[in-house]
Image (cartoon, rainbow, N blue to C red; front, side, top):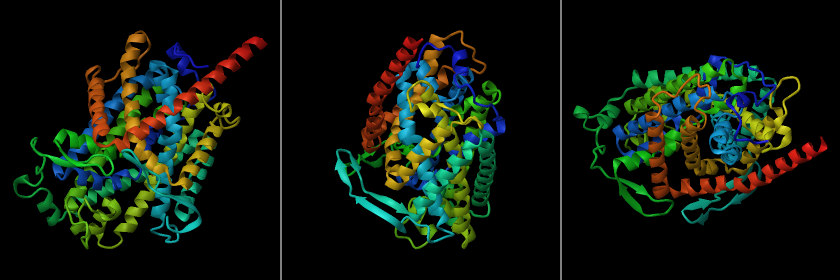
Length: 524
């Protein structure tokens, strides 16, 4: 049964049977591997189109780095205080109550975790098509229907192709493979994660090295930095105004620097998300009170540093502004890179031939490792929810031999596969970015609440910079949410609706849990 009166000691033992096998390296690999998917190779084009300034383009990544690092430092205290399976779900449950924990877990299962896994697995299929052309989103094996675009207030629903093509079939195969592999113990899943995270780290390091050294072009330097760095600071003055379209089909308005930096966070924050996944697996981490906070800082610090350097490398190879109809990568620039594949365009300039294949190989490694880390971690949240009576009962049981949440892995894989077939995952992820940020705000607010509610609870690690840095996170993230509500309603209201749909589901499951508890009590 759910209880907001559990002590930290109770919470740390709320997941009996899980085996603590993850060391510091494996924990850090889960943090970094879950963060690095395909975003860093794609989202820079959209950020460049929004900012129209090299300084603001890099500034967007700096804002993301500050927010994410403060978040990691703050979560470290919660993880050390409550090192149990479920992570953020547990923190919200204990600080704000079981409803808030459930709404996070519900949204995680419905979209955040499963939608991201679907997106990166289908991306794996798309980039595998570089080597095997028959694998494509247009090569249909079973086309069920086309759902037309349906305008609904500030958003557009639909515009999806439902069915099985060779790309999403490949993605579904990866989803099934990872679910199957992770049943055989967290040690095997961690080994795969370690290998693929190391490989993607080397790939990104090579990308940074190539773009920052031999790949530098005179065209990019003159366009992005110019004489005396004048081009770099162009459109970055406090008085600069930037055009933003309100919603879909709405009017275009001019906004200041602070607003435009908040608007473009949709891409950079999404590509830096999932750093909290290690907290989901806390019940299987060795010495979790030390290793989880440390792995958060190490993993987040490494990824955000590499992301910033990769974006800087793009500026050294490609002009930021370009012609959407340009015949070459240099002419199209970062803003209009073909299909937003900025990294592919940059490597194409470096190598002239073979760049697309090299980048495709790097993204295959990156997406596979990301999907593995998220598959491994997500099932632990549903396991914790089930043990509180707030999810399918079978998901709260461990595999008798391997001590893994096998049922949770299976349920997660089934829903992810359905999202792959429906083609809705990309649209759903657009809708949920705002809700993800709100849950981060609530969780860090829970840090203050738990300091008051449980002042004497053991805290082996205390959040660095408390209370200033956590308060700064809440202020910055709240500003971004306000801006998105005003200027990007297509990313906000749908996400809130998806979250609120969980309230009747919570009432249903909590009622059943209480009924079962009363029946069990009466039988004794």
